[in-house]
Image 1 (tube, one colour):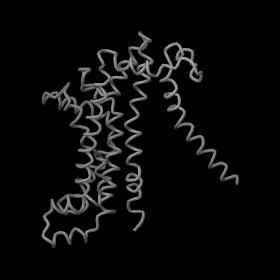
Image 2 (cartoon, one colour):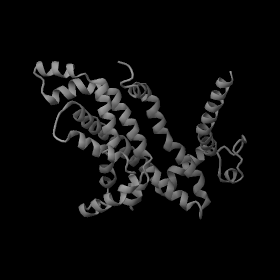
Image 3 (spheres, one colour):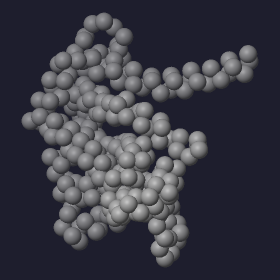
Image 4 (spheres, one colour):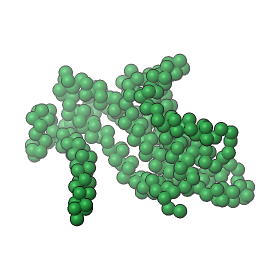
Length: 275
C-alpha cells in the first residue's frame, strides 16, 4: 500500500506539473489586461476571450493569421515530407547492403547528438551563399531532414517489414520502388505516423532557426511572432492579452494531431516488443 501510494503521489505531481501551465494559459486567455496584472484569474468577471481573439487577429493588420498559416506550412508539410524521407532512408539502411553502410549509419547517429542550435550558423552561411536568406525555403528545407527520424525508420523497418514478404513481392515481379510503396510502406504506417508526430512537434516549436534566417515578419512562424510581440509588451502592455490568446491557439494543432493520431503513435512505440 505504501508503494502504491508513493507511485500515485508521484503520478499526481507529474500531472499537476504538466497541466497547471495549460490551465493558467486557458484561464489567462479569458482575462483582460487589468485582470492579468491583478493576477485575478479565477474570478467570474472580466471574461474577455472574444475580445482578446478579436484584438489578436486585428493587431498589426491581422499578421497573426499569416504567422499561423506559415507555421502550418513549415510544420505540417515539412513533417510529412521529412517523415517520408526519414522512413525511406531507414528502410534502405535496414533492407539493402552497400559499402560502408554501418559507417554511414554511424554518421547519422552522430547527427542525432548535434544540437540544432549549433547548426544554425552553418545553415545561415549556406543559405547566404545560395541567396535563400529571408525566404520561405531557408526555414523549410532544413526541417525536412532529421537524423533521429532515420534511426527510427530503421528500427520500424526491422520490426514491421519481414524480409520474406519483400522476397515474395520480388518473385512476383515487383520492382524495388513498387515493393517499397505498395508493400513495405503500408507496413511502416505506424512508424511513419510516429516520425511525423516527432517532426511536427519539433518544427512547430522551432524558434532559433527562423530567428536567424528571417527578418521579414510576413514569413515568421507563430513561435517567433509571439516572441516579438512579447518583447514589445514590456513597453506596450496592451500586447499581453493577444500574446496569451495567441499562445493558446498555438498549442491547438499539436493537441489535435496527438489526439487524432495517438492510436497509430502508441502502436508505433511498441515496435519490436511483440514478436
